[in-house]
Length: 359
Image (tube, rainbow, N blue to C red):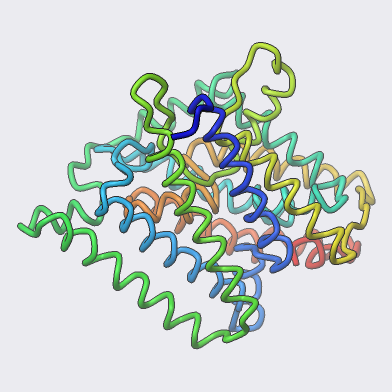
């Protein structure tokens, strides 16, 4: 084993995962919001298919690691015995609407920030500050009230627990939901796109989620310095990264902070290599107001829903958590509502950036 301290080794590997993830995200324009928009406007969406395929890879990989004994997914935040329905639903809806206002979710804003988009960088900082305020600051109390008032006991809070309750063993209980999810996602992707670039990017992104589980759940499982079992997510890491920058000398780098840093580097490398490093800024006061409002909604919503499109949509779903499926459904619903009811305001401004910033 490595002589490095466990948290340092995990951070280095997280940075490497982020590097690969960032390159794949930037090169492929991977974005759930763009996928939802394309589906609504064109009736088909390769980007939505890419997200589905990435989720399939993440589900199969995470469950494979669990069955092989490399990781205990029950130690993650996604698999509990309670469901905060208000947090998952309302938080997800707020996040989805916020993503529409800012033209991208937190992971997409991370990509845009590293390509010179100053709008995205400012909003990303707002997301981080709001998320931390929601975790431990002035927004803690409304978030806690929302979650605690709507939390219900859920002894069958995961799909595999449902099958296990019917008498199936662990292997069958986990594969019974995982295999159909993966097969449906692959079939859908085949029907929508056979572009090799789309498939490679989706597999790499889903594989990055699996790698995250392996690094924290297996390599980070040190008896004296155990690391939290987690995988890719971006809202909390953005918040923690801002705090880390301000308290560097007294802080310890975490998986999320290193992942975020590696992603920024990977995106920048990909953008420079492809000639896509283009500085952009706000074009009007109304545009800035809309973006900042969206950032606040995403910061609060992501904490209330326990994750973003990557955190709940890929990492959470890969654990077969029912809460993750509820959160993802709420986020997508929020995006649909935002695109139908809110997005027309941006188009009425005539600034010409409504689609380009998220593509």
